[in-house]
Image (tube, rainbow, N blue to C red; front, side, top):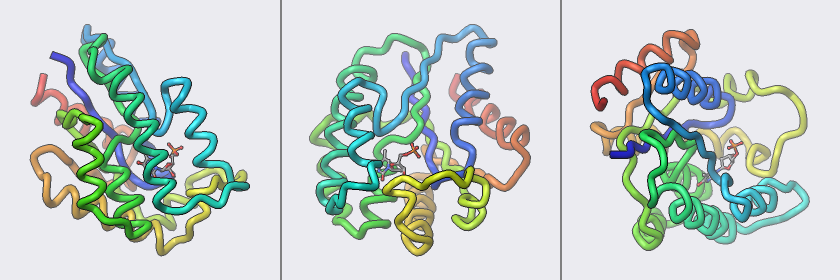
Length: 199
Ligand code: TMP
């Protein structure tokens, strides 16, 4: 049975590094694994991603939410409904909409939950929230130009972080919070220990 593992957290917490490490671990252990990112991964979703991150667009919070779900719907239909690999590692999934558009932008979380159901999102087998103070996250990111969402300010990211931590508290068997200030290999060891429990 295909297992969906999602990685969440604010910018600069090291999601891509950890996804790559887990992907390599799974392949070395004899499993098949693929990696997708949100918004994106399908050609349609990648175009939506460009729209969403483009700083020259002034997008309302509702438009932002609905575009995230348009891209997500394509991802669910293309990759998550017909499993082709043992594992799918997702660089963000629907928890991101609750954290960013719900807690961050202040949109109605019940409405977001209805969208999650409406497009038939599968529930991930495990979700890792890499947790870090937003100030440290932005220090770690390269200082080249920030995209539209990254330009939302520190208060926004404090709310997003709080959203992720509350989601984790309310879904503690699925969502594991990991201290992203730890050494890269310590984080990877913690992730692999959780993965071993569901193999
Ligand atoms: P990233 O994948 O390069 O971090 O860029 C994606 C951006 O989109 C990031 O700022 C988080 C944001 N995002 C949302 O606001 N809501 C969502 O549902 C998802 C998947 C991403």
